[in-house]
Amino acid sequence: MQLQQIDFVNPLHGEGYSKYGVYCQPYGGEIIRQLVRQIDPSIKFRILDETRGDKIDFEGDVMFGTAYTYPVKRLYRIARAYRSRGKPVVLGGIHVSMIAGYPELAAEEYKNADAIVVGEGESVVADLIADLKAGRLKPVYQGHPVESDFPVLCEEPLRPGWQFPVQFLRGCPWGCEFCCVPGMFGSRYRQRPIEFILQEIEHYHDVRGPTNTMVSLDDDLNDPKTVYPVLEAIRANLGEVQGGWNSATDMNLVVNFKGRVNHKFLRLASDTNCYSLYFGFENVHSRVLTGELGVKKNTPKYYPKLAKACHDYGIMAWGSTILSPQSATWEDVEFMVDWYNAAEIDVMGWSILTPLPGTPLFDKMYREGIVYSGDDRSQATKVAWLDLDWSKYDVLHTVWLPEGAQYEPEEYEEMREWAMHNYETGLTKSALLAAYNLIRGRTRWAMRHGVRAFMGLKHRGVLPEKLVERAFFGKRVRHELD
Ligand code: SF4
Image (cartoon, rainbow, N blue to C red; front, side, top):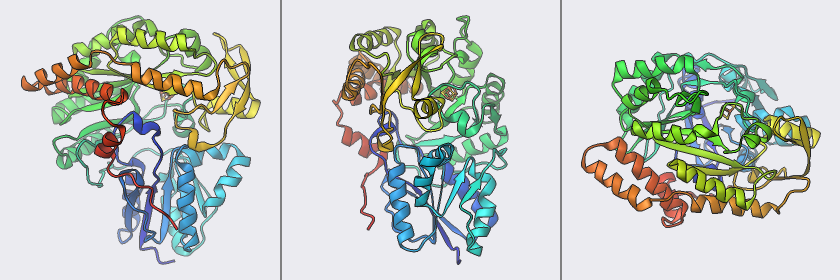
C-alpha cells in the first residue's frame, strides 16, 4: 500500500482519571512518531487526541491506536470506523497488551483490528512499517522490552497549564496487587540514559509557556539507586526544571522503613524545582494494605512525618487512597478523611479498587473467582459479582463485589464521592498563603498552596467541573464517527 500518513489515535474517555489531574501529552505516540521518522521520514505522522478536542477525520492511510482499559471501547469504535473506510488498523498499548493474557476475551476484542501489538511496541515498529507497505500485516506482533536509544522530544503544542511528560525509567519490582506496571514493563527498573532525560528537559524548556510544568511518568522516582544521579545531573547541567516538576514517588524515598527522613533526596528535589510529589498511600490500615491490596512497602504511621518533611522543603504531598468493597465502610471513610486531614496531606485522590486486566487482582477474580482477605493473605473471599464493562474501569465505579459485601455497588461510589468532597480543610488559608508567597516571589511555595486550594475548590464543586475541564483539557467533544 501507499503509506503516506499514519493517524495515531488517543480516544476520548469519560471523567475517569482526568478528575485527578491535568492534561499530559500522549508520550507513547511521540515515541512511535520518532521511530517512524527514523525508518521513513517521508511518512507523515499525526497524533489525533480526542481528549484535547482533536477530530477524527480519517485522513490517514492507516490508524494506530492505544488506550487504557476504560476508554478502550471508544478506541474500538474508532477502529471500526477506519476499517469501514478500507483503512487498516493497528492497536497496541496497555489494555490491548494485557488482554492477551485472557484468550477468550482477546479473541473478541482483537476483531476490531487488522494487527495487534502486544507489549512494548518500539521493537516492532520497523516490521510494522515494512509489512504495511507490502500489504502483508501479521495478526499479532509481539514486542519485547527495549533499552531506550533516543530522547523523546514531544512535538505536540503545549497549551497553558498542560504538563510535559518525561520518562525516567520503566518497570517496577514491587508487584502491588492492583497495578499493571510490572505486567507491562517487567519487574526490574530500567533506567533511561541520563543524557536523554536532560535533552528532553532542555527541549521542554524551549517549548514551554509560563504556566507549563513537567511531569515525570508513573512511579518514575522509585529506584533509590538511580534517583540521585538523575537529579544531580539535572541540578549540575540545568540548575532546575523551569516552571516546576512533579512525579509519583515511593514514600520510602522520603521517610524510610525506620522513620528516617531522607534530606538528601528532598534537597535534590527542592533544588531542581519539584513542587509536588505523589504518593500511593492506598490506605491507612496495614491489614488492608498487605492483605487486600498486596502493598508491601508502605508504613502508614509515617505518612504525617512524610507530609511535614515535604512541606519543610516547599513540596506538596499529594496522595491517593483506595476503597475496597471488601473493607470500606462509612465509618472507616470518615475516619480516613479525618486522619489524612490531620496528617496534612495536601491533596487526596480517592478511588475504588478496580481489577484492571493484567494485574494479579484481576487474574484471581476472573480466573479463580476469589480475592484475598485477611492480614497475611492466607485467606480468600469469593467474588460474588464481576462486571466486565471496561468503560466502568475508571476507578470511580464499583465493578465487583465480594460475597457478603455490606453495601450495593452504588454506595461505594457515593462513599468515594463523599470523601472527595469532604477532604481538604483550610481552603481559605491555602488561597491566602498562595497569594502571600506569590507576592514574595516564592513561586514553588505559592504553587503548593495554590494547587491545594484549587483542588479543594474543584472537589467540593465550588469550581464547576465543566469549567475546569475546559480550561485544562480544551473542548471535549465526542465527535460523531459515521
Ligand atoms: S503501584 Fe507503584 S510501587 Fe506498586 S507495583 Fe505499581 S508502580 Fe510499582
